Length: 179
Length: 443
Image (cartoon, rainbow over all chains, first blue to last red; front, top):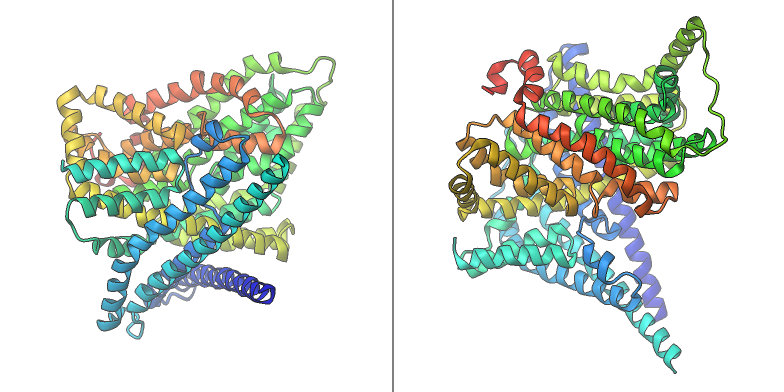
């Protein structure tokens, strides 16, 4: 069991690193393509029309993967009044709140999955090629969107497992304290 | 409005109140409203996907990346020295250094939190040694961080342009005069407040008295700060010189900042660049989720006639442009007290555009007004991002920062908001003479 756990943890670390590396490469390529567009225009006096579109495709691609990075990083925006005013100083309640929020997030994301699935099937069935970048199938980006949402779900599930574990540990500590 | 939509909106406020991440609130209440009104959920995937397909969003990504690189590049020290040479001699001038340095940092980072993250650790301990109370200098820096939203390139302005479909060049210029007014107001108020927050018996540092020595100090400090100050020059010169589009200016800013950080200031290391990538990617991911699902929500509001109903209700209730503007300000200020800037822009702008169009309010003017409001939200408790960050960085308790910050909010922030709202010339004059009346429109 512990070997399985360790393999899973290693796999998740690998996934997280891979996502960050893919996004970093994507951001760098997007920046350089746009930079090259300006350099071409003013320095080489030769506008390569495809650069702008190619940069946009690259940007969209890494932004959907970045959504997964933001999920495991927990860099979300929320209004924390309830936590700050009502739950402050109550570790058990805070832990329950965390579990509830992550489970609710998973539930909500699951509502999006059927429409994303239909969107994905349509993208696969009807490939759309770029106007300027003729070899680029923009359906790949729609597929990346679906893939990104699955990655988000996986990370939310991992967070849920972690939060439930924390809650159980807190409860165990409290019970030990009571006895 | 259908009952399903009303229940969706109730779920929206309930979700916000319980502290569910806003992206999931947007998605959840949209799904609920669609389900209850008997509509298909299919449009959600397409709307979320297409929200990311935008060149302006690419510009936002570049400015965030360049801002984070700047914060890591160690330029704050040079900017502080330059600001000190300019205003250090005035009464309370050492605190004015912080305000002027924030003004410069705003033009480099395009946001508020990176400004204070770079300046508080640098300035607060130094000013304490020179006799200024920590809670006062932290409060001034936190209040001034709002300038990050007003001095271009500004990420909230880009977001406004993305949602309202306005010219980036025009709205960038629209917030400059309110920003400068705010900085001047802060400096004037600081002149009167600083003496009340001094630590007794501590000597201020000596500043060269002779004019020649002062001019030399200004020259030397400007020379060191010049590479950093090149970023806003590239961005603004590029956009207003018609050389490049906002996203191209963003890419140039990233490349220039990286070169300056690596080869001029030499503070960017492999580790700090990797950390900048990680911070930027996490922020962009958060924006992807917010913008994608926020677009689903706002499309639904428009499709179901909520925006039109809101506009109709406001027109019927107030029937006067000035009262409507006042009500919008109150709404935005209250939202700013609880919600972060980008979600406010995503929720409110699509709702109020039909309303302001009825009253012939210029959308560039509206942009300035909305961004000033969103900026005030950063410094308005209880949910004031800059106070949270400032308190954590300086070690001053949150409550201790509130009193001095309230002075800056009441005597400078709100009057500037009032002026921006009721004097359209303040925001529309500069864009009109720069980018032309055909882009700005009548005001």
